[in-house]
Image 1 (cartoon, rainbow, N blue to C red):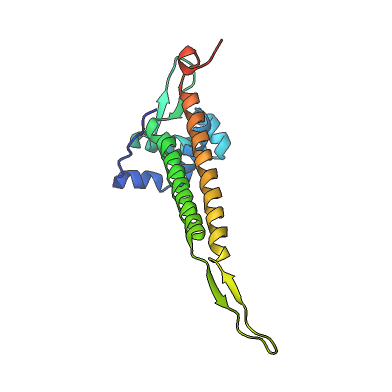
Image 2: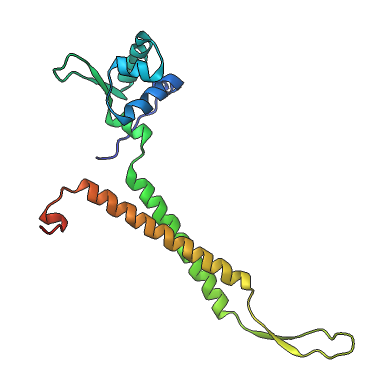
Length: 182
């Protein structure tokens, strides 16, 4: 499904300002329903449901489908679905970008830790003894931060790739073109 642009106008905001209409959109997100089913699910009168459905239909978020049955089913339009479920690839892109940024930060922190010079700093003399030079390296916190960022980045990138593969598999029909062997 292609991403849908929703034009935000004063009327759109007025339609979405009602908690009842938002509950209707969420309920219709699970499946298409009749006015009677919606009224029973939401605990509202049929006339109230009809009024709110009319407002949602006028805004283009809900459509009535008369498929030859005795009942009229209401379902979300692509615009209504886009309100409740933003385009999936946007989430994947955000996860991938955050993962790559975290991974790059972790690699930089590890590189800074590994390339920091080691200095010999004399220990201040204690009462009754002399101070011997002790090697002092980069702060251990840099190593811990680098490892943590690299692990978090790797997990985010792996999760984004898994989501992308799952999404791609769901949109492709099974067959020889998708790599399935029969």
